Amino acid sequence: MYKNSLLPRRTAFLAALLALFALPSSAAELSGDGSAQSPYLIATEADLIAFRSKVNGGEASAHARLT
Image 1: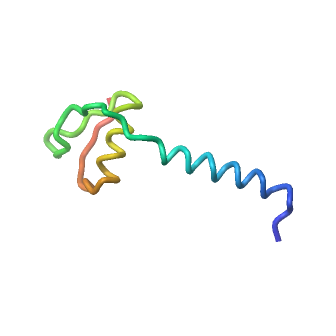
Image 2: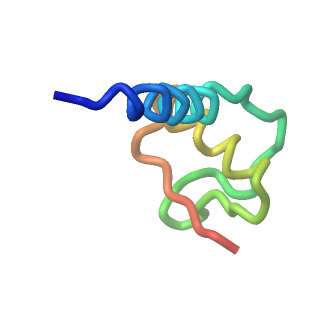
């Protein structure tokens, strides 16, 4: 059984994770078209958020390269 002192820590941790994944998508325009020949280029946090939005939006076969 869990100790009562761990419950607030776990709750805070889960809340932080939820907040991380619930961040609004950015309006950043990614370079590339997501194909293997021309992958999306991810250079900034905004690029990563935009790429995340594309993948979570159904573009599961998108290719990317960190720059």
